Length: 142
Image (cartoon, rainbow, N blue to C red; front, top):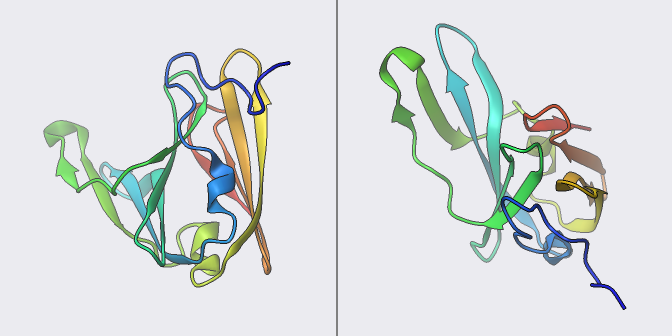
């Protein structure tokens, strides 16, 4: 009999089981963007922070997997001539912003056999947010 969860990314491992988000109320969403000479690009990362203060980090891996791990939001930092990474709470910049204060009622993973998790649907009472890494970047759509 095989594992009950799909095998994770060969490079980044399994991360955390995203079904652990079910039942959690999202208190805040923090995201990071690459800012270089104008409008921010991204988000590169998002962190879902629940009522208990637990943080779930979602980002795209270098091999196009979707990383889901437990970690605190990063700090903003300067990369000199390459711009700046800006990390801050989201307002309306991502589809996740509209679900702050709601509970996650279901999650669905999409898995590619060679790279592991490539997508994740976060289902809320008011709608679904799809997190995807299929282009090598984190994409969030509702």
